[in-house]
Length: 455
Image (cartoon, rainbow, N blue to C red):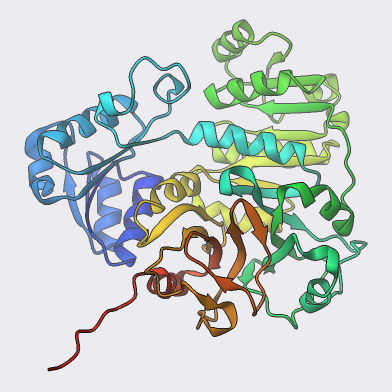
């Protein structure tokens, strides 16, 4: 597919890298010469330096022949205008990253169609939803949902005293009560593996599980995770995401507070929040930590737009007694480091944006894509009547070695995959795959090849 990306920041660069690696023809526009030099040096894509709001720049990038435009600059106004211009060049698919919730939340004045956008992506909205779910699930470090929330993907760390520690996957599969729970990936020493029946779960591992929503409360004791009420949350950074998150948390959590270094931003946040207390101060001020009783905090959430400040403040909050710390980091270079220095939970807006776009680029009837920090993907794929995989038992499907079926969804019910289950048209299948297996997965779920007989 011929795709034009507007914006060469972290999201734009990673999209260009991901999509060019998958064989798409990519062009990218940005005004920043340093960013474009990095792209020219590292990626096999067409790079154009200029203002994407100018039709002449879009033409230089080949917009007249593009099948898709993805506008992911940090300015909503630019993304909106680019999508509007793209309609004049008859580009069929138009994506825009929109940070302002006025464009995406319920009750917005203009529909996306009226703004010439096919798909609007608001990472902030997804981040808020993700954090609320993390706070409400004991011990979880990553979350995603499939089948309209009926089937959950949850990542947990495995403590020494977890009942499932030391058990092989096949031992868990043989337990009758496990028919609503599957371990689909193990992260050990920073590396993700698709587990086999003989693999053993070890203390210190992180596991990705596919679990029926109703079964989640029964899964937690197996991981030695007890349900404890979250009573105190401290947020670092008073940006729009943290303010909207505080509004959501005020409804259910007794003590919510925000620390903000800018007096102006602190005052603005205090004006729009009702019960949340806003403190003007640094995320590294130990005296302030004492004043707000950081040692009572159930969660410390570092949500500012400064990665380094987020990491340092979270480490200090943990050292000062906060039970768990969550960090937002935009720079992917930090991701491998954070786990090794004791960070509990990491959220990367780049992965959120890339995941939201990838489902529209995957071949076949892909309903959702969730990209893991470890570069694997979890996909929910619909099975059509003419799909190569339809009407076959799982045992007869030649599935790639570095991928697995996590669950089948049939008429709203989750089914744990076994060799004897036949995949039927109308099912949707949750697949976990490492990058090298994705193309094979697409072929498996693609249409059967029909050959004309020789005469």
